[in-house]
Image (tube, rainbow, N blue to C red; front, side, top):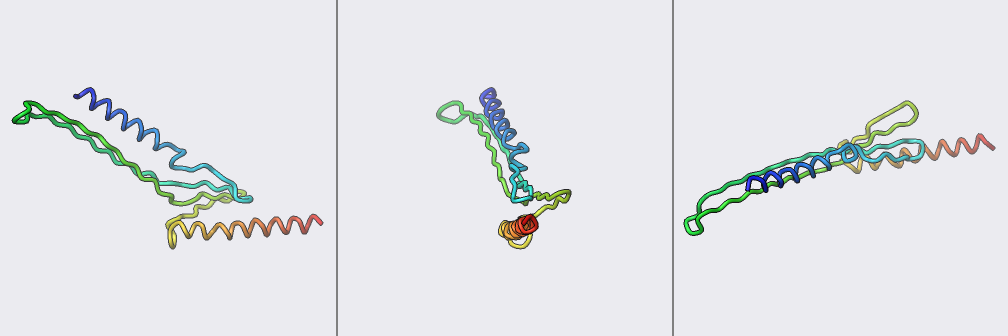
Length: 123
């Protein structure tokens, strides 16, 4: 039983280790016009295990083991850069994730304004 428990424990630990990597915590970068955006995510993990053995009155002997893990992933904001300026837009400000999405139209508007000015100056 001990060997099976150790194997099960190793499998759960390996899975959790593979999931808690940089790509999980920091999302894939994307461009929004001239703005470079990187989603930032919080990862929380929990783990539990147990085992036991004993003698049941009618069957003579019993044993068992269990292991389990859980993971929660939560977006906490975006790193946004433009030129040499970097800022963090939190999803926790105001009304959570909706506050971050409210910033997107503002970023798009700034981008479109700059493109319109560039085109006007080129003519």
